Amino acid sequence: GQLCIKGPHYRLGPPQLSSSERELIVQLDSSLPQQSFAFSQITPGSTWNFQLWYRDVPAGGAGYNLSSALGLTFAP
Image (cartoon, rainbow, N blue to C red; front, side):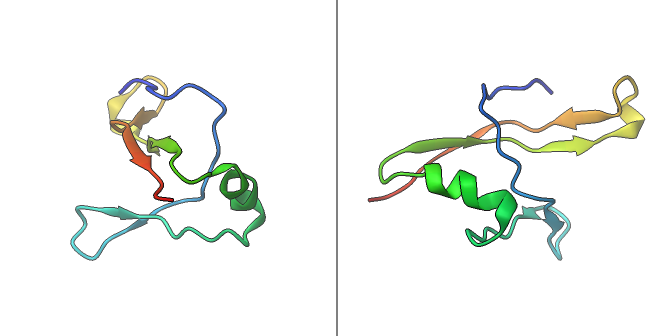
C-alpha cells in the first residue's frame, strides 16, 4: 500500500481484531494523552482521513504495509 494521507499524522493506538477477524476496532478516548491532542483538533464539519499502518512481514521489504484511506466528516 501507499501512504495516502499527508501530515500531520496522529497515532490513535493499536487496534484490536474483531471476533469475526474481518474488522479492526480502535477505542477512541479523548482522555488518553496520546489521543487528546488529536481530539482537540476535531471541529464540527471537519473531515479527517484515517489509514492503518500495520506489520506485514510476509510482504518482505520494509515489513509493514498500509491500508486504503478512509475519510470521515464529523457532524456538528
